[in-house]
Length: 463
Image 1 (cartoon, helix red, strand yellow):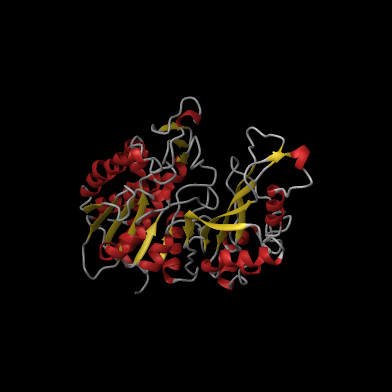
Image 2 (tube, rainbow, N blue to C red):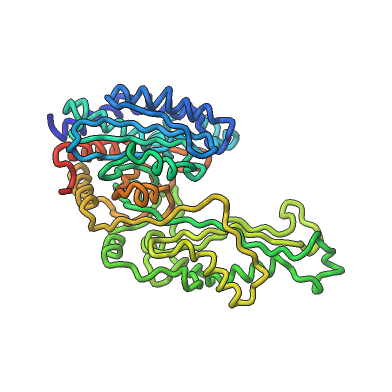
């Protein structure tokens, strides 16, 4: 019984085709949570696929309906070996974004795993079925080698993450005992670089809102009324232009974070954002000029215009439009007051003479910002484990640039959170031709088997 033998078992699970077999069954279940008519597939994923898989590993599972009126259930499974041992919560989501079947390349399908070279195609291979399949496979490898985990394990799989994780906070408030643990160790999102293991300990927050200029009912002929009627599109464009400068540097004072802490700066100094040869290249002349690219995406706030409409873009007519609308987003880090995001913008717009721009928060699209200090004992412990497995230190990112429901784990369950992503930036998640990398998945199995083995040996850092 050795650490290396457990890692070898995890690698053999990949090499022998077991990983692809399990992932293929899971990808074939069309768990599109954005389509209410697919709710049955969400239940099937938990009941017919995940529950028996975990039962074979000695887990007892409960499938719980969503506390909200959204039909996306939860599975909570546990394997308790010793009441005095450390308890680790692992998370994944079984739902996926819409399949977009007609847009996939010829020979590919969102609901069938296809392997081409190092790429494993299929909806959910990267986000998130492939990632929690890796973690469950690593747990199985440790159990096979040692006969026990050596720690208590709880697994939560939700089926509504792609619609904003409805009911997750309510689940934790109503059934917090089911998910009580000492730490969250989970996997989602991309690595910083495809060939470099990455740890992140939180996420940027996300606040979506609409900016609207609605001046009148109906359009009016631009020849007869141009120069006489205020143009809402122009007003809104100028209002948006006050929020950042020409390179995207935020001008709303309350939206600008305090200076980065030394521990965050030191961690990000070792981080280079690189999605690989197929991914987009960083625009070095965009964003906060005084910061490095890593500091801009992981340590700073970013404002984005996600959509902007005025008139009818598909069929424009010669008329002054009556209204203009922009759907916008602020990605924000710890230290930004989410309750003051819109009030601060309101004050800023009023000071610049744009009282006619109305602001409305979006019904969906809010996650709070979270961050675990890179010097936290659980971070140092995880870094040591990954380094021992791979032979080199992983990238340590204080928080992911994107957003996850990490605040429910930190703010409600009170857990330190360590995320070990098994995807990469050019994986096409949320797009046609989504794929994982076989080499990265195999290494992910080794990393997680090493982590779980070490948990059974040491129980993590001193509690």
